[in-house]
Amino acid sequence: MRLIIGLTGGIGSGKSTVANEFKELGIDVVDADKVARQVVEPGQPALAEIELYFGKDVIDQEDALDRAKLRDIIFKCEAKKQWLNALLHPLIRDTMLAQLNAAKSEYAILEAPLLFENNLTKYTKYNLLVDVNEQVQIERAILRDGNTKAQIQAIMKAQLTREQRLEKADYIIDNNSEDLNTLKHNIKILHTQFLTLL
Ligand code: ADP
Image (tube, rainbow, N blue to C red):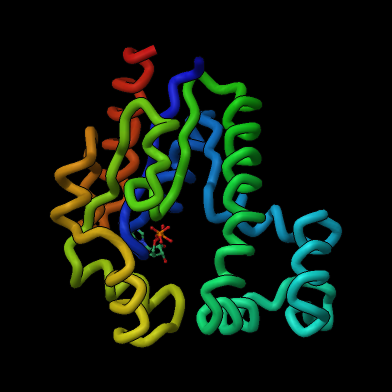
C-alpha cells in the first residue's frame, strides 16, 4: 500500500498553496473537495439521480448542479439530506480511493479541509496540518473569497478548532508568515522526511 499523507487545515489556512508546492515536487495530490464536485459534474450518473429525486429545480441553465438550491432543500429536510448523503458519500469515498490508488508518485497526499472531522484519517498514515492563527486565517479567507467575517466564522464553527487540529496532527507546517520562500523551504524539508518513511 502506498504511503498516503493527509493534508488539512481550516478554511484559508493555505492547504491549496501547500498542496501546489508538493505537486511541484512531483507528488500526486487528491483533493477531497474537488472529488466531491467531480462526482456531480454534468454527465455524471449521480447528477442524473439527483435530478430524478429532487426535480429540475436543482439543475441550472448550464445543466450543472445548483448547489445553493440543493443546500437550501436539504437544510430544511433531514430525510432528503440523508438520501443525498447515502448517494454521494460512498461515491466520493470510492472515487477518492481510486484516484489515490492511481497515484504514481513515491507517496500521495489526500488534501481535505475536514480530514479529521470526516474520519478520512483512516486512509492516511500520517497527517500534516497547515497551521495559522485565527486572525490570519480570517483575513486571508476574506481576501480570497470576498466573504464577510461572519460568513468565514460560520464555516469555522463547523470545523475543528485550531487547538483540536494541533493535537491530532503528526506534522505541522507554520503558514503565519507571508514569506513564501521559507514556506517552500519547509515543504521541501517535509518532503525529504516523507521519503524516508517509505
Ligand atoms: P485553503 O486551501 O486552506 O483554503 P489557500 O491555499 O487557498 O487556503 O490560501 C488562502 C489564501 O491565502 C489564498 O488567497 C492564498 O493565496 C493566500 N495565502 C496562502 N498562504 C499565504 C502566505 N504564506 N502569505 C500570504 N498569503 C497566503
